[in-house]
Image (cartoon, rainbow, N blue to C red; front, side):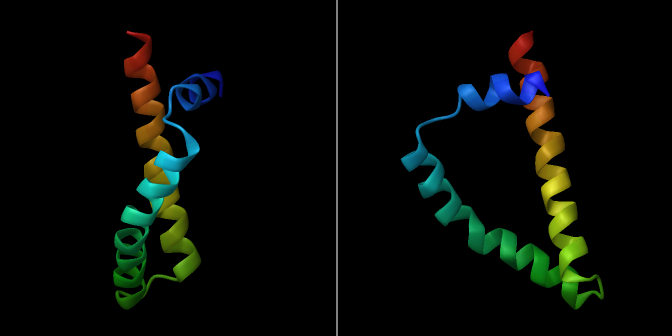
Length: 66
């Protein structure tokens, strides 16, 4: 957990994060909608997207330590 906290401290300011969310949210929603179209429940698809993002954050935090 400390790796995630260390990485979060290095993230840009809140405005940048808000801008990034606004840019990416439609694409993420499109991914979830595509999964729903393939028969997966929306909550399950959203959880998988979050899990993938979490794995990516952990990978980045490990790279920052090296």
